[in-house]
Length: 389
Picture 1: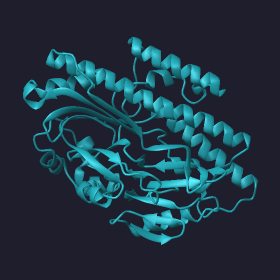
Picture 2 (picture 1 turned 180 degrees about the vertical axis):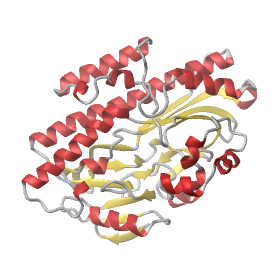
Picture 3 (picture 1 turned 30 degrees about the vertical axis):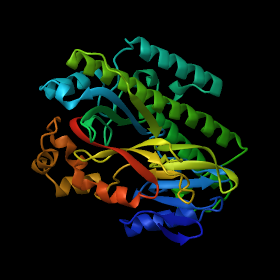
């Protein structure tokens, strides 16, 4: 851990100068309490650094939460081991791809599953209680539930150190959450402009607690976070069904973890109740289970938190990019990706070049930097990978 100032502490041993400067700028906002904590996987983001934990008093910066509100992970440990699996892994990959819409803009055509309808009804009730209509952001928001998206979102079948089978996936609040975030980032910018507030970066615009704008953001933010949680649970149900049909046996969920890594909630730190925004970080309170994915083709980790107070009881959320998507496409080829994936079953396409493991930080270094933040309980290696273009 590196203490850069009273308001900025850093756990990243690999840190680009522009990322450090961005985090230092955010840490100087007047409502930070007690300090910003930078996680080992930190990299440049919109306004606030991805991989940062930002506690605020009386204000929230919507861009410091991020545009994929509630993005996170879910994992299920099954009763299966490697030697019980069918040989044809491609069949399961294709079944999952058929059950879950992949890629940006890809949604369900209709609501055909009872568990999907139940979740949509629950989310609709929450929206009514929160006093807003998510259809104002996306008329098809209900059809987005149970869809993956693109970028670094994925579904994986993995094995732990004992060759036990885990089902593992990464996604968030999809298009509706993105539109909610983008709307409130602009509302915050307009609020600061109306009140003649000078900002070091326009994307650090904030809303002040006690205002209508703040209350509306919190209500819609919390709804989007719940949507993301249910979206992962819905997809996991579909993955389980596909897995059961592939093996011909029912799945016993021996352990399940579902956690956000882009979100805000109320927490108490250093004697104050703050709004804690984890933009690319997981909660890691003492003994709390969490998930830290690697990149496509590398290991992921099931962890428990160590409750590090200086890190605001947080830990990294993944490997963190070292190449932008355009840089990765200029640097690597489809052949490079194929070599990196080895014998992992995946859809072989040029669309995934920007997700090659070399575009990300070394997950081993990230986990070494996180040794004071989490304890590794299980190390997972993937055997099947599903992604959207």
